[in-house]
Length: 448
Image (cartoon, rainbow, N blue to C red; front, top):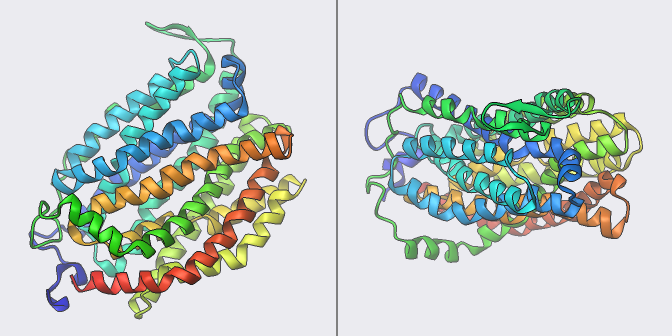
């Protein structure tokens, strides 16, 4: 196909167009879903010690609940959900998914042991799996390529807002609830405060799912429709671009491990090491994890889009490489500090720049994806980066380091710093090796 005639290159849909106002409203709904998903995913980080005491669990078991339980199901669901996204109306996939993961989150509040809570967390992961493939595919079909990094960054703000709200609101709720011996719930009777926290955050999914209903399914950017790519063609594309897949997995998967450590274990570290209560550290972490991250995400989208528009096809990875080089050492020493101010500053810099990659990565995946593979390639990306690497080891690795290397659960913050020291150099080396392959893949996709 000729590049100048491609709807992908120009950003114009192949069928009917989506008005800018309706497109903005649709992105806003997707942003709300992202916030809701992240709150449900990360609330457990505010409840580590109450759950441990109630169910008699270890930090390693909590790491499995926060990471492996969620990530394994999320990863297993990634490709099948991406397949559905590529073939069926994405709005109805999202409608069902929001309801189901809300029910799964509420089911976490009914857990009476490790196995039940593990299965409920797995259900949350499974039903959240369609979210990002659906959202990324919709966004790629409603905005021009030249603005993709900016809009993906706006959508990815949901991860930051959700994390911040989970910390701030969750901290206030948890601090209030933990003053109680139990909470009485109609039909359920008396339940523990941590169980009630899961229930009240899961139930809103029933109403939020309705937000997507008024929107029409966006037209897909392809003259071939959306059913012309077989699984064999998909895996042939992956095999022929294995260097790209390996590069993105090492860079963003490794840094997502660090992200997971910060999100999942900073609340416990603030409680154990700095002796702060949930309301105090929830507010502090919520502010330093969300506000700098939102600013950094929007700046990254703006800077990368300008760089990309100027002809720099490796803008996404080159930008992120310089971010890691300049901020990685600063964050490491802040995380190792015994000062709460320095620790919070390090978390703020990390969330604002160092590990603030999701919008960059999502846009990068879409720039290399053929139109009929967007859902499945996005699902594969989140399988590799978010599930198998980030969510699994991000929650588990700091716990293993603190328990078996440092042999001190109080020093979990130093274990987070150790993960940063491991994966930042690896990410930089992977970018230096792989960005030429990514640049070639972007140029190839522009001609489709």
